[in-house]
Image (cartoon, rainbow, N blue to C red):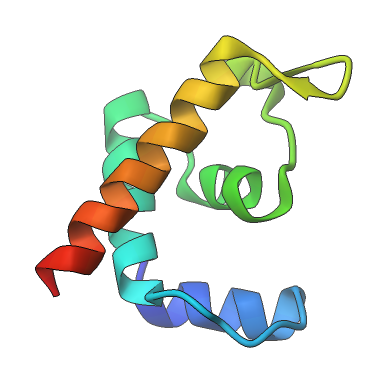
Length: 86
């Protein structure tokens, strides 16, 4: 996943102006996808839209599970690491 793809998704699909570093976000999502061996897009949807990932059991009754919180918090931590490195 590239920063341009993230930026395009935020602008076109979500209809928002990106407020964060799209390149750092793309790097964080790519790292997490490799760590979990899971689809990058689904992880991005989880982070930006709070869209549940059934196979990873991220939600239960509309709330984050411990696994969902772990994934989201790890994505955030990775994002901030990449953002501070740039």
